[in-house]
Amino acid sequence: MNALVDQGLLTVFFTLSAVVIGASSPHASEGEEAYQRCVVCHQPDGAGIPGIFPALKNRFADIMASVEGREYFTMVLIDGLIGTIEIEGQRYVGAMPAQYLTDAQISALIDYLATNFGASDAADSNLLLSEDEVAQIRSKFSSANAQSTLDLRTRVPALNGQ
Ligand code: HEC
Image (tube, rainbow, N blue to C red):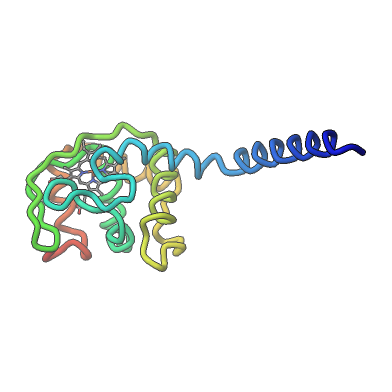
């Protein structure tokens, strides 16, 4: 076989692999896509901007470690958050707009954050929420709003006293 044909076959092979790999993980790419909505504020690396946009990196796993934290995180995305919060001595007097994500998008986004911004134990499946779990939280707090999300925050063990 001549070299040109070899090269052609290789190209076909890699193109097909890329399609297969891409297709095998729609959940992961959905999560990455959903995170693009957050980057303008929380930054691509999740470090935020101190005093303006809270960091998600290295804080995500702590928040998600409790039932209350998983409820709070989900409701921040669904309803947004208005009010003054304090994180490591920094005050944030901000407002986060509701994100209008579907249950599937929220589940995928949490997966993405656990992989990219979690602590060393990010693989811990306790951090993750299935689409059904997101739906349950959404209906449990259906009368919540951006102000009452702040009340949910006070129930999160990892955020108490911060
Ligand atoms: C327009 C800017 C903006 C966008 C877009 C945004 N956020 Fe926020 N986010 C904020 C601000 C500001 C706060 C703090 C609000 C406050 O001070 O009450 C916040 C707070 C949070 C908190 C609470 C942190 C804590 O310690 O209590 C989480 C979690 C969060 N955002 C996640 C996200 C995720 C995930 C996305 C993308 C789906 C996102 N945000 C999109 C601005 C934004």
